Length: 51
Length: 482
Image 1 (tube, rainbow over the protein chains, first blue to last red):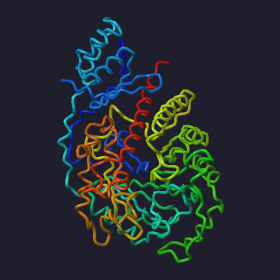
Image 2 (cartoon, rainbow over the protein chains, first blue to last red):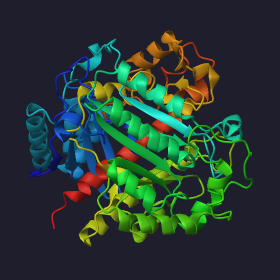
Image 3 (cartoon, chains in turn cyan, blue):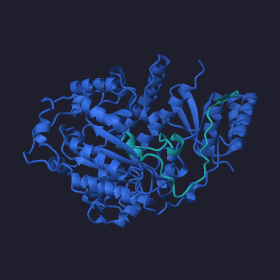
Image 4 (cartoon, rainbow over the protein chains, first blue to last red):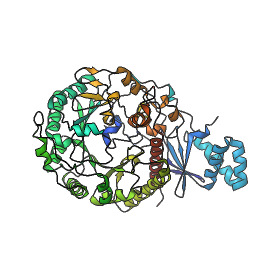
Protein backbone atom coordinates (compact mmCIF):
# COMPACT_ATOMS: atom_id res chain seq x y z
CA UNK A 1 0.00 0.00 0.00
CA UNK A 2 1.35 3.39 -0.98
CA UNK A 3 -0.21 6.65 0.07
CA UNK A 4 0.34 10.00 -1.55
CA UNK A 5 -1.66 13.17 -1.09
CA UNK A 6 -4.78 12.36 -3.02
CA UNK A 7 -4.45 8.74 -4.10
CA UNK A 8 -3.81 5.69 -1.98
CA UNK A 9 -2.70 2.62 -3.90
CA UNK A 10 -4.32 -0.39 -2.29
CA UNK A 11 -3.06 -3.02 -4.69
CA UNK A 12 -0.45 -2.61 -7.39
CA UNK A 13 -1.72 -5.13 -9.89
CA UNK A 14 0.33 -7.12 -12.33
CA UNK A 15 -2.02 -8.22 -15.06
CA UNK A 16 0.50 -7.60 -17.79
CA UNK A 17 1.59 -11.20 -17.95
CA UNK A 18 2.71 -13.04 -21.05
CA UNK A 19 -0.06 -14.73 -22.98
CA UNK A 20 0.84 -18.38 -23.09
CA UNK A 21 -1.03 -20.62 -25.48
CA UNK A 22 -1.92 -23.28 -24.91
CA UNK A 23 -2.31 -22.61 -21.24
CA UNK A 24 -0.56 -25.05 -18.93
CA UNK A 25 -3.82 -26.34 -17.48
CA UNK A 26 -2.57 -26.74 -13.94
CA UNK A 27 -5.37 -24.69 -12.45
CA UNK A 28 -8.71 -25.92 -11.25
CA UNK A 29 -11.68 -25.61 -13.57
CA UNK A 30 -13.55 -22.66 -12.16
CA UNK A 31 -16.94 -24.24 -11.70
CA UNK A 32 -15.56 -27.20 -9.78
CA UNK A 33 -14.39 -25.22 -6.84
CA UNK A 34 -17.52 -23.96 -5.16
CA UNK A 35 -19.94 -21.90 -7.03
CA UNK A 36 -21.44 -24.06 -9.77
CA UNK A 37 -23.56 -21.32 -11.29
CA UNK A 38 -21.79 -18.00 -11.61
CA UNK A 39 -18.10 -18.66 -11.53
CA UNK A 40 -15.53 -16.06 -12.42
CA UNK A 41 -11.76 -16.17 -12.76
CA UNK A 42 -10.45 -13.35 -10.59
CA UNK A 43 -10.75 -15.54 -7.52
CA UNK A 44 -9.05 -18.55 -9.10
CA UNK A 45 -5.59 -19.67 -8.11
CA UNK A 46 -2.80 -20.41 -10.54
CA UNK A 47 -2.08 -24.13 -10.29
CA UNK A 48 1.64 -23.65 -10.58
CA UNK A 49 1.91 -20.99 -7.90
CA UNK A 50 -0.30 -23.15 -5.66
CA UNK A 51 2.22 -25.98 -5.94
CA UNK B 1 -3.08 8.66 -25.72
CA UNK B 2 -4.66 7.51 -22.49
CA UNK B 3 -7.72 5.32 -22.54
CA UNK B 4 -9.89 7.10 -20.02
CA UNK B 5 -12.40 4.28 -19.93
CA UNK B 6 -9.77 1.80 -18.77
CA UNK B 7 -10.48 2.77 -15.18
CA UNK B 8 -13.61 1.78 -13.29
CA UNK B 9 -14.65 4.29 -10.64
CA UNK B 10 -16.57 2.75 -7.77
CA UNK B 11 -18.41 4.69 -5.11
CA UNK B 12 -18.62 2.19 -2.26
CA UNK B 13 -20.38 3.59 0.77
CA UNK B 14 -18.29 6.67 1.62
CA UNK B 15 -15.18 5.62 -0.34
CA UNK B 16 -14.21 6.30 -3.94
CA UNK B 17 -12.16 3.54 -5.56
CA UNK B 18 -10.44 3.41 -8.94
CA UNK B 19 -9.84 -0.01 -10.48
CA UNK B 20 -7.35 0.04 -13.34
CA UNK B 21 -8.72 -2.57 -15.73
CA UNK B 22 -5.56 -3.41 -17.64
CA UNK B 23 -3.14 -3.66 -14.72
CA UNK B 24 -5.51 -4.89 -12.02
CA UNK B 25 -4.42 -2.09 -9.69
CA UNK B 26 -6.77 -0.68 -7.11
CA UNK B 27 -6.60 2.82 -5.66
CA UNK B 28 -8.59 4.87 -3.21
CA UNK B 29 -9.19 8.47 -4.21
CA UNK B 30 -9.96 11.51 -2.13
CA UNK B 31 -12.55 14.04 -3.27
CA UNK B 32 -10.10 15.92 -5.50
CA UNK B 33 -8.68 12.90 -7.32
CA UNK B 34 -12.11 11.29 -7.53
CA UNK B 35 -13.61 14.46 -8.96
CA UNK B 36 -10.80 14.81 -11.47
CA UNK B 37 -11.12 11.24 -12.73
CA UNK B 38 -14.87 11.50 -12.95
CA UNK B 39 -14.52 14.63 -15.08
CA UNK B 40 -11.98 12.91 -17.30
CA UNK B 41 -14.33 10.02 -17.95
CA UNK B 42 -17.27 12.30 -18.64
CA UNK B 43 -15.42 14.78 -20.84
CA UNK B 44 -12.92 12.47 -22.49
CA UNK B 45 -10.48 15.39 -22.50
CA UNK B 46 -7.65 15.61 -19.99
CA UNK B 47 -6.86 19.33 -20.26
CA UNK B 48 -10.47 20.42 -20.10
CA UNK B 49 -11.04 18.17 -17.10
CA UNK B 50 -8.03 19.61 -15.30
CA UNK B 51 -9.32 23.12 -15.97
CA UNK B 52 -12.77 22.28 -14.62
CA UNK B 53 -11.33 20.47 -11.61
CA UNK B 54 -9.15 23.47 -10.85
CA UNK B 55 -12.23 25.67 -10.69
CA UNK B 56 -13.86 23.21 -8.31
CA UNK B 57 -10.99 22.27 -6.01
CA UNK B 58 -8.35 24.97 -6.48
CA UNK B 59 -5.05 24.95 -8.40
CA UNK B 60 -2.80 23.60 -5.66
CA UNK B 61 -4.85 20.49 -4.91
CA UNK B 62 -5.52 19.68 -8.54
CA UNK B 63 -1.91 20.17 -9.54
CA UNK B 64 -0.84 17.69 -6.87
CA UNK B 65 -3.51 15.19 -7.93
CA UNK B 66 -2.45 15.52 -11.57
CA UNK B 67 1.14 14.73 -10.60
CA UNK B 68 0.02 11.62 -8.76
CA UNK B 69 -2.13 10.44 -11.65
CA UNK B 70 0.75 10.92 -14.08
CA UNK B 71 3.19 9.11 -11.81
CA UNK B 72 0.83 6.15 -11.44
CA UNK B 73 0.37 6.04 -15.19
CA UNK B 74 4.14 6.01 -15.71
CA UNK B 75 4.42 3.16 -13.20
CA UNK B 76 1.78 1.14 -15.05
CA UNK B 77 -0.93 1.36 -12.41
CA UNK B 78 -3.46 3.83 -13.81
CA UNK B 79 -4.87 4.32 -17.30
CA UNK B 80 -2.67 1.43 -18.26
CA UNK B 81 -2.69 0.48 -21.94
CA UNK B 82 -4.42 -2.70 -23.02
CA UNK B 83 -2.19 -5.71 -22.35
CA UNK B 84 -2.48 -6.80 -25.95
CA UNK B 85 -4.27 -10.04 -25.25
CA UNK B 86 -6.82 -9.51 -28.02
CA UNK B 87 -4.74 -11.65 -30.34
CA UNK B 88 -5.50 -14.64 -28.14
CA UNK B 89 -6.34 -17.78 -30.07
CA UNK B 90 -7.40 -20.86 -28.14
CA UNK B 91 -5.25 -23.94 -28.58
CA UNK B 92 -6.74 -26.90 -30.38
CA UNK B 93 -5.33 -29.70 -28.26
CA UNK B 94 -7.27 -32.37 -26.40
CA UNK B 95 -7.20 -30.51 -23.14
CA UNK B 96 -9.95 -32.08 -21.07
CA UNK B 97 -8.96 -31.84 -17.42
CA UNK B 98 -12.15 -32.05 -15.37
CA UNK B 99 -15.35 -34.04 -15.28
CA UNK B 100 -18.56 -33.45 -13.44
CA UNK B 101 -20.13 -36.85 -12.88
CA UNK B 102 -23.86 -36.69 -12.27
CA UNK B 103 -23.70 -39.91 -10.30
CA UNK B 104 -27.31 -39.50 -9.22
CA UNK B 105 -30.02 -37.59 -10.94
CA UNK B 106 -32.14 -38.69 -8.06
CA UNK B 107 -32.34 -36.32 -5.13
CA UNK B 108 -33.71 -36.54 -1.61
CA UNK B 109 -34.58 -32.88 -1.79
CA UNK B 110 -36.83 -30.95 -4.11
CA UNK B 111 -35.70 -27.35 -4.13
CA UNK B 112 -38.00 -24.85 -5.78
CA UNK B 113 -35.17 -23.14 -7.66
CA UNK B 114 -33.37 -26.27 -8.85
CA UNK B 115 -31.94 -25.65 -12.32
CA UNK B 116 -32.13 -29.33 -13.31
CA UNK B 117 -34.90 -29.82 -15.90
CA UNK B 118 -38.03 -31.51 -14.59
CA UNK B 119 -37.76 -34.56 -16.81
CA UNK B 120 -34.25 -35.20 -15.51
CA UNK B 121 -35.33 -34.94 -11.89
CA UNK B 122 -38.30 -37.23 -12.28
CA UNK B 123 -36.16 -39.76 -14.14
CA UNK B 124 -34.21 -40.40 -10.91
CA UNK B 125 -31.40 -42.14 -12.72
CA UNK B 126 -28.38 -43.46 -10.86
CA UNK B 127 -25.07 -43.66 -12.71
CA UNK B 128 -23.95 -47.29 -12.97
CA UNK B 129 -20.39 -48.31 -12.23
CA UNK B 130 -19.65 -49.08 -15.86
CA UNK B 131 -20.50 -45.48 -16.82
CA UNK B 132 -18.37 -44.09 -14.02
CA UNK B 133 -15.43 -46.23 -15.15
CA UNK B 134 -15.93 -45.29 -18.80
CA UNK B 135 -16.04 -41.60 -17.91
CA UNK B 136 -12.78 -41.83 -16.00
CA UNK B 137 -11.24 -43.77 -18.88
CA UNK B 138 -12.24 -40.91 -21.17
CA UNK B 139 -10.62 -38.37 -18.87
CA UNK B 140 -7.41 -40.35 -18.63
CA UNK B 141 -7.29 -41.00 -22.36
CA UNK B 142 -8.11 -37.43 -23.37
CA UNK B 143 -5.86 -35.54 -21.04
CA UNK B 144 -2.15 -35.13 -20.79
CA UNK B 145 -2.56 -32.91 -17.74
CA UNK B 146 -1.10 -34.14 -14.51
CA UNK B 147 -3.82 -32.40 -12.49
CA UNK B 148 -7.20 -34.00 -13.09
CA UNK B 149 -10.43 -33.08 -11.31
CA UNK B 150 -13.62 -35.02 -10.79
CA UNK B 151 -16.70 -33.54 -9.16
CA UNK B 152 -19.37 -35.89 -7.88
CA UNK B 153 -22.62 -34.08 -8.45
CA UNK B 154 -26.33 -34.70 -8.72
CA UNK B 155 -29.22 -34.59 -7.84
CA UNK B 156 -27.79 -35.70 -4.57
CA UNK B 157 -24.57 -37.63 -5.22
CA UNK B 158 -24.60 -39.35 -1.84
CA UNK B 159 -27.58 -41.36 -3.08
CA UNK B 160 -24.87 -43.13 -5.05
CA UNK B 161 -22.14 -43.32 -2.43
CA UNK B 162 -21.12 -46.73 -3.72
CA UNK B 163 -20.57 -45.21 -7.14
CA UNK B 164 -18.47 -42.42 -5.66
CA UNK B 165 -16.31 -44.91 -3.79
CA UNK B 166 -15.95 -47.01 -6.91
CA UNK B 167 -15.02 -43.99 -9.00
CA UNK B 168 -12.35 -42.82 -6.60
CA UNK B 169 -10.81 -46.28 -6.36
CA UNK B 170 -10.86 -46.68 -10.13
CA UNK B 171 -9.30 -43.27 -10.77
CA UNK B 172 -6.49 -43.90 -8.32
CA UNK B 173 -5.89 -47.36 -9.72
CA UNK B 174 -5.89 -46.36 -13.40
CA UNK B 175 -4.18 -43.03 -13.01
CA UNK B 176 -1.61 -43.46 -10.24
CA UNK B 177 0.66 -40.88 -11.83
CA UNK B 178 -2.03 -38.21 -11.90
CA UNK B 179 -2.73 -35.64 -9.25
CA UNK B 180 -6.44 -36.24 -8.61
CA UNK B 181 -8.66 -33.61 -7.12
CA UNK B 182 -12.09 -34.86 -6.10
CA UNK B 183 -14.98 -32.68 -5.07
CA UNK B 184 -18.40 -33.57 -3.73
CA UNK B 185 -21.38 -31.24 -3.91
CA UNK B 186 -23.95 -32.38 -1.39
CA UNK B 187 -27.07 -31.14 0.38
CA UNK B 188 -25.58 -32.83 3.50
CA UNK B 189 -28.67 -34.86 4.46
CA UNK B 190 -26.79 -38.14 4.05
CA UNK B 191 -23.44 -36.76 5.13
CA UNK B 192 -22.22 -38.61 8.19
CA UNK B 193 -18.91 -39.30 9.89
CA UNK B 194 -18.14 -42.29 7.66
CA UNK B 195 -18.67 -40.22 4.52
CA UNK B 196 -16.60 -37.44 6.02
CA UNK B 197 -13.79 -39.84 6.81
CA UNK B 198 -13.84 -41.16 3.25
CA UNK B 199 -13.59 -37.64 1.82
CA UNK B 200 -10.74 -36.78 4.18
CA UNK B 201 -8.87 -39.93 3.21
CA UNK B 202 -9.07 -38.97 -0.45
CA UNK B 203 -8.40 -35.25 -0.27
CA UNK B 204 -11.85 -34.16 -1.35
CA UNK B 205 -12.97 -30.58 -1.55
CA UNK B 206 -16.55 -30.31 -0.35
CA UNK B 207 -19.37 -28.05 -1.41
CA UNK B 208 -22.02 -28.20 1.30
CA UNK B 209 -25.36 -26.65 0.41
CA UNK B 210 -27.13 -24.33 2.81
CA UNK B 211 -28.95 -21.08 2.14
CA UNK B 212 -28.40 -19.66 5.59
CA UNK B 213 -31.09 -18.54 8.01
CA UNK B 214 -33.66 -21.29 8.63
CA UNK B 215 -36.55 -19.22 7.35
CA UNK B 216 -34.61 -18.52 4.14
CA UNK B 217 -33.34 -22.06 3.68
CA UNK B 218 -36.72 -23.66 4.33
CA UNK B 219 -38.45 -21.38 1.87
CA UNK B 220 -36.92 -23.26 -1.04
CA UNK B 221 -34.98 -26.30 0.12
CA UNK B 222 -37.45 -29.07 0.94
CA UNK B 223 -37.19 -32.80 1.34
CA UNK B 224 -38.45 -34.67 -1.66
CA UNK B 225 -42.09 -35.37 -0.91
CA UNK B 226 -42.47 -38.75 -2.44
CA UNK B 227 -40.29 -41.77 -2.16
CA UNK B 228 -39.02 -43.51 -4.88
CA UNK B 229 -39.40 -45.99 -7.60
CA UNK B 230 -38.76 -49.44 -6.32
CA UNK B 231 -36.58 -50.44 -9.26
CA UNK B 232 -33.32 -51.98 -8.17
CA UNK B 233 -30.36 -49.70 -8.46
CA UNK B 234 -27.56 -50.84 -10.72
CA UNK B 235 -24.21 -52.22 -9.84
CA UNK B 236 -23.05 -52.13 -6.29
CA UNK B 237 -25.84 -49.93 -5.08
CA UNK B 238 -28.39 -50.92 -2.53
CA UNK B 239 -31.90 -49.98 -3.56
CA UNK B 240 -32.30 -46.25 -3.56
CA UNK B 241 -35.37 -46.59 -1.38
CA UNK B 242 -33.26 -48.08 1.38
CA UNK B 243 -30.92 -45.14 1.25
CA UNK B 244 -33.70 -42.64 1.19
CA UNK B 245 -35.25 -44.02 4.34
CA UNK B 246 -32.25 -42.59 6.12
CA UNK B 247 -33.37 -39.12 5.15
CA UNK B 248 -35.39 -37.43 7.85
CA UNK B 249 -39.03 -37.30 6.93
CA UNK B 250 -39.47 -33.59 7.16
CA UNK B 251 -40.29 -30.90 4.68
CA UNK B 252 -37.98 -28.11 5.71
CA UNK B 253 -34.36 -29.15 6.01
CA UNK B 254 -32.67 -26.23 7.76
CA UNK B 255 -32.44 -27.82 11.19
CA UNK B 256 -30.96 -31.04 9.87
CA UNK B 257 -28.50 -29.23 7.62
CA UNK B 258 -27.40 -26.99 10.48
CA UNK B 259 -26.62 -30.07 12.59
CA UNK B 260 -24.76 -31.71 9.71
CA UNK B 261 -22.66 -28.60 9.19
CA UNK B 262 -21.80 -28.28 12.85
CA UNK B 263 -20.83 -31.95 12.98
CA UNK B 264 -18.73 -31.52 9.87
CA UNK B 265 -16.83 -28.54 11.26
CA UNK B 266 -15.86 -30.71 14.22
CA UNK B 267 -14.91 -33.76 12.19
CA UNK B 268 -12.94 -32.07 9.47
CA UNK B 269 -11.39 -28.84 10.59
CA UNK B 270 -9.05 -27.68 7.87
CA UNK B 271 -10.51 -29.68 4.98
CA UNK B 272 -10.99 -27.65 1.82
CA UNK B 273 -14.68 -26.85 1.62
CA UNK B 274 -17.28 -24.20 1.00
CA UNK B 275 -20.72 -23.86 2.47
CA UNK B 276 -22.56 -22.86 -0.66
CA UNK B 277 -25.94 -21.18 -0.72
CA UNK B 278 -28.27 -19.45 -3.11
CA UNK B 279 -29.84 -16.06 -2.62
CA UNK B 280 -33.00 -14.96 -4.35
CA UNK B 281 -35.17 -11.87 -4.53
CA UNK B 282 -36.60 -12.98 -1.19
CA UNK B 283 -33.38 -12.49 0.76
CA UNK B 284 -31.54 -9.55 -0.68
CA UNK B 285 -30.24 -8.99 2.85
CA UNK B 286 -28.04 -12.06 2.37
CA UNK B 287 -25.33 -10.71 4.65
CA UNK B 288 -27.60 -12.00 7.39
CA UNK B 289 -27.33 -15.48 5.91
CA UNK B 290 -23.56 -15.25 5.90
CA UNK B 291 -23.77 -14.09 9.52
CA UNK B 292 -25.97 -17.08 10.38
CA UNK B 293 -23.65 -19.57 8.68
CA UNK B 294 -20.65 -18.02 10.40
CA UNK B 295 -22.49 -18.48 13.67
CA UNK B 296 -22.75 -22.19 12.92
CA UNK B 297 -18.99 -22.26 12.51
CA UNK B 298 -18.65 -21.87 8.74
CA UNK B 299 -15.43 -20.14 7.75
CA UNK B 300 -15.62 -20.68 3.97
CA UNK B 301 -18.84 -19.46 2.42
CA UNK B 302 -20.10 -19.00 -1.10
CA UNK B 303 -23.49 -17.41 -1.68
CA UNK B 304 -24.65 -17.23 -5.28
CA UNK B 305 -27.45 -15.45 -7.12
CA UNK B 306 -30.29 -17.76 -8.07
CA UNK B 307 -30.48 -19.02 -11.64
CA UNK B 308 -34.15 -18.80 -12.48
CA UNK B 309 -36.66 -18.07 -15.18
CA UNK B 310 -37.55 -14.37 -14.88
CA UNK B 311 -41.18 -15.36 -14.42
CA UNK B 312 -40.42 -17.17 -11.18
CA UNK B 313 -41.46 -15.18 -8.11
CA UNK B 314 -38.04 -15.56 -6.55
CA UNK B 315 -36.05 -14.58 -9.66
CA UNK B 316 -33.70 -11.62 -9.56
CA UNK B 317 -34.42 -8.63 -11.76
CA UNK B 318 -32.76 -5.43 -12.90
CA UNK B 319 -34.60 -3.44 -10.25
CA UNK B 320 -32.95 -5.55 -7.54
CA UNK B 321 -29.45 -4.56 -8.64
CA UNK B 322 -28.99 -1.36 -6.58
CA UNK B 323 -30.02 -3.23 -3.45
CA UNK B 324 -27.75 -6.18 -4.31
CA UNK B 325 -24.80 -3.87 -4.92
CA UNK B 326 -25.29 -2.19 -1.57
CA UNK B 327 -25.62 -5.60 0.07
CA UNK B 328 -22.27 -6.72 -1.30
CA UNK B 329 -20.72 -3.57 0.21
CA UNK B 330 -22.45 -4.36 3.48
CA UNK B 331 -21.16 -7.91 3.30
CA UNK B 332 -17.62 -6.66 2.72
CA UNK B 333 -17.82 -4.49 5.80
CA UNK B 334 -19.32 -7.33 7.85
CA UNK B 335 -16.49 -9.67 6.86
CA UNK B 336 -13.83 -7.11 7.75
CA UNK B 337 -15.55 -6.39 11.08
CA UNK B 338 -15.50 -10.12 11.81
CA UNK B 339 -11.79 -10.21 11.02
CA UNK B 340 -11.17 -7.35 13.38
CA UNK B 341 -12.91 -9.45 16.01
CA UNK B 342 -10.63 -12.40 15.25
CA UNK B 343 -12.95 -14.43 13.04
CA UNK B 344 -11.75 -14.70 9.44
CA UNK B 345 -14.43 -15.84 6.99
CA UNK B 346 -13.48 -16.58 3.41
CA UNK B 347 -16.24 -15.44 1.07
CA UNK B 348 -15.51 -17.28 -2.15
CA UNK B 349 -16.06 -14.52 -4.65
CA UNK B 350 -14.27 -11.89 -2.59
CA UNK B 351 -10.97 -13.76 -2.72
CA UNK B 352 -9.41 -11.72 -5.52
CA UNK B 353 -5.69 -11.98 -5.95
CA UNK B 354 -4.95 -8.82 -7.92
CA UNK B 355 -1.14 -8.99 -7.76
CA UNK B 356 -1.16 -12.68 -8.69
CA UNK B 357 -4.17 -14.66 -9.79
CA UNK B 358 -4.55 -16.80 -12.87
CA UNK B 359 -2.69 -16.50 -16.15
CA UNK B 360 -3.90 -14.48 -19.11
CA UNK B 361 -5.32 -17.49 -20.94
CA UNK B 362 -7.41 -18.46 -17.95
CA UNK B 363 -8.66 -14.92 -17.61
CA UNK B 364 -9.81 -14.94 -21.21
CA UNK B 365 -11.40 -18.37 -21.36
CA UNK B 366 -13.26 -18.58 -18.07
CA UNK B 367 -14.61 -21.91 -16.95
CA UNK B 368 -13.49 -24.07 -19.89
CA UNK B 369 -16.90 -25.71 -20.21
CA UNK B 370 -17.30 -27.88 -23.26
CA UNK B 371 -13.66 -28.75 -23.83
CA UNK B 372 -11.64 -28.51 -20.59
CA UNK B 373 -14.61 -29.51 -18.53
CA UNK B 374 -17.46 -31.88 -19.36
CA UNK B 375 -20.47 -33.14 -17.45
CA UNK B 376 -21.50 -36.77 -17.73
CA UNK B 377 -25.13 -37.83 -17.25
CA UNK B 378 -25.98 -41.21 -15.70
CA UNK B 379 -26.63 -42.67 -19.15
CA UNK B 380 -23.18 -41.58 -20.36
CA UNK B 381 -24.31 -38.54 -22.34
CA UNK B 382 -21.72 -35.76 -22.45
CA UNK B 383 -22.62 -32.12 -21.91
CA UNK B 384 -20.54 -28.91 -21.78
CA UNK B 385 -21.22 -28.53 -18.05
CA UNK B 386 -23.62 -29.65 -15.33
CA UNK B 387 -26.10 -26.88 -16.11
CA UNK B 388 -26.61 -28.19 -19.66
CA UNK B 389 -27.51 -31.73 -18.58
CA UNK B 390 -30.99 -32.53 -19.82
CA UNK B 391 -30.85 -30.01 -22.66
CA UNK B 392 -30.42 -32.33 -25.66
CA UNK B 393 -29.58 -29.50 -28.06
CA UNK B 394 -26.34 -29.04 -26.13
CA UNK B 395 -25.45 -32.73 -25.85
CA UNK B 396 -21.90 -33.15 -27.19
CA UNK B 397 -21.93 -36.91 -27.53
CA UNK B 398 -21.69 -39.90 -25.26
CA UNK B 399 -19.11 -42.14 -23.67
CA UNK B 400 -19.69 -44.95 -26.11
CA UNK B 401 -19.27 -42.97 -29.32
CA UNK B 402 -17.28 -40.01 -28.08
CA UNK B 403 -17.79 -36.40 -29.12
CA UNK B 404 -20.47 -36.26 -31.84
CA UNK B 405 -20.72 -32.48 -31.99
CA UNK B 406 -17.19 -31.19 -32.57
CA UNK B 407 -18.77 -28.06 -34.05
CA UNK B 408 -20.49 -27.27 -30.78
CA UNK B 409 -17.38 -28.08 -28.80
CA UNK B 410 -15.45 -25.66 -30.98
CA UNK B 411 -18.04 -22.96 -30.33
CA UNK B 412 -17.39 -23.33 -26.62
CA UNK B 413 -13.64 -23.22 -27.16
CA UNK B 414 -13.94 -20.04 -29.19
CA UNK B 415 -16.29 -18.30 -26.75
CA UNK B 416 -13.54 -16.33 -25.02
CA UNK B 417 -13.60 -12.75 -23.78
CA UNK B 418 -12.45 -11.14 -27.02
CA UNK B 419 -15.00 -13.10 -29.06
CA UNK B 420 -17.83 -11.41 -27.16
CA UNK B 421 -18.50 -7.78 -28.12
CA UNK B 422 -20.11 -7.06 -24.75
CA UNK B 423 -17.01 -8.25 -22.91
CA UNK B 424 -14.45 -6.36 -24.95
CA UNK B 425 -15.37 -3.07 -23.38
CA UNK B 426 -16.44 -4.33 -19.97
CA UNK B 427 -14.33 -3.18 -17.02
CA UNK B 428 -14.71 -6.60 -15.35
CA UNK B 429 -13.53 -8.70 -18.28
CA UNK B 430 -10.21 -9.90 -16.81
CA UNK B 431 -11.81 -10.77 -13.47
CA UNK B 432 -14.93 -12.39 -14.87
CA UNK B 433 -13.61 -14.42 -17.79
CA UNK B 434 -16.60 -13.86 -20.05
CA UNK B 435 -19.47 -15.07 -17.94
CA UNK B 436 -21.36 -18.30 -17.56
CA UNK B 437 -21.92 -20.07 -20.88
CA UNK B 438 -24.91 -21.94 -19.52
CA UNK B 439 -26.74 -18.84 -18.44
CA UNK B 440 -25.99 -17.17 -21.76
CA UNK B 441 -27.12 -20.14 -23.80
CA UNK B 442 -30.06 -21.35 -21.76
CA UNK B 443 -31.65 -17.97 -21.16
CA UNK B 444 -31.51 -16.46 -24.61
CA UNK B 445 -29.27 -18.43 -26.84
CA UNK B 446 -31.21 -21.25 -28.45
CA UNK B 447 -32.45 -19.09 -31.29
CA UNK B 448 -29.09 -17.49 -32.04
CA UNK B 449 -26.60 -18.83 -34.60
CA UNK B 450 -23.85 -19.23 -32.02
CA UNK B 451 -26.18 -20.74 -29.46
CA UNK B 452 -25.90 -17.58 -27.40
CA UNK B 453 -22.28 -18.24 -26.51
CA UNK B 454 -21.16 -14.92 -27.96
CA UNK B 455 -23.49 -12.88 -25.82
CA UNK B 456 -23.37 -13.12 -22.04
CA UNK B 457 -26.69 -12.82 -20.26
CA UNK B 458 -26.97 -9.11 -19.36
CA UNK B 459 -28.47 -9.55 -15.90
CA UNK B 460 -25.75 -12.03 -14.97
CA UNK B 461 -23.13 -9.54 -16.10
CA UNK B 462 -24.58 -6.87 -13.85
CA UNK B 463 -24.74 -9.26 -10.91
CA UNK B 464 -21.12 -10.26 -11.42
CA UNK B 465 -20.09 -6.61 -11.73
CA UNK B 466 -21.88 -5.80 -8.47
CA UNK B 467 -20.19 -8.72 -6.77
CA UNK B 468 -16.79 -7.67 -8.07
CA UNK B 469 -17.34 -4.14 -6.82
CA UNK B 470 -18.03 -5.69 -3.43
CA UNK B 471 -14.85 -7.76 -3.71
CA UNK B 472 -12.77 -4.68 -4.52
CA UNK B 473 -14.33 -2.81 -1.62
CA UNK B 474 -13.47 -5.76 0.61
CA UNK B 475 -9.84 -5.41 -0.49
CA UNK B 476 -9.93 -1.67 0.19
CA UNK B 477 -11.34 -2.17 3.67
CA UNK B 478 -8.58 -4.64 4.43
CA UNK B 479 -5.97 -1.99 3.78
CA UNK B 480 -7.44 0.51 6.22
CA UNK B 481 -5.06 2.19 8.58
CA UNK B 482 -5.79 1.09 12.14
